[in-house]
Image (cartoon, rainbow, N blue to C red; front, side):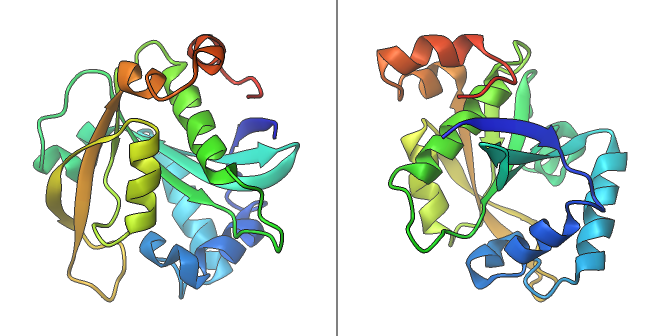
Length: 196
């Protein structure tokens, strides 16, 4: 596994992103019924926002996951917790698993995402707010050091729902590094934009 990140191109990347977000496993992303044009429009809005960025994660050059970074103070989270300096919000969607899934792949992706976000010295804490029903992501979050804060109510991601019940969780740099083996922790703390 060799992970790199590049900004999402809303038009060029729409076919691959649509093939991911429109599948049932991605239902908490709220785009199962989206068209490819809906994906173009959503990621064009993100690119133009000034406070939210989307990145395509590549594994040896092949699209493997989507990571979004955002400023919590410019999001609905500002209404449900006291945002601290250095807080960075994150969303993650891994591509559909292949027929022969690689053991530990999703954990490695999550570690790479955390390392990428913490490579910015201004990042003090990563904030996530996955759907409270998304138990798989809660397990993954705990593996990399996230501590649950509690369930909060946010605007709905899925147009068919009135609101989103989200498990607000936080992870400091120290909490993340404590989950890594000593061999991994030193290079992860020091790299930015390099393959992991």
